[in-house]
Length: 116
Image (cartoon, rainbow, N blue to C red; front, top):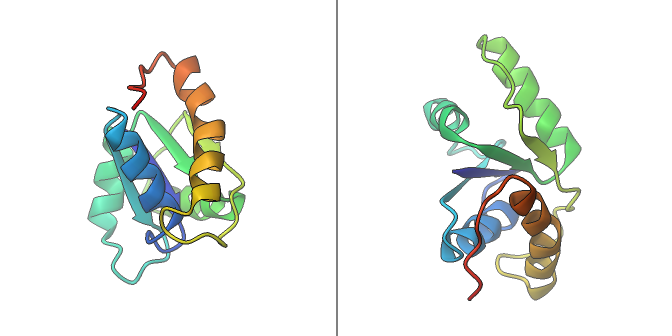
């Protein structure tokens, strides 16, 4: 399972999870600053995630601080995508950026992607 993390879990990470679920890669998303964030969900997602993608570096730092505070280790496969919070859900430019950045990483880890 892939976990996508952005600030609110509305646009970037939701778009990414929807794209890769459609391509046969089980994916979840969460907004680390969302008022709806339930830490048990974050803990469960981290526990089962094979790869974690943070949209920006400050989100990775926030995640690391949170995990340290509860005595959890950081996921070994965590990537920062450097995608700013300026795109709406399913924005065509966002989709292209996500595909261009994520597919090579998934292929490097031996994940098969259904091209649709």
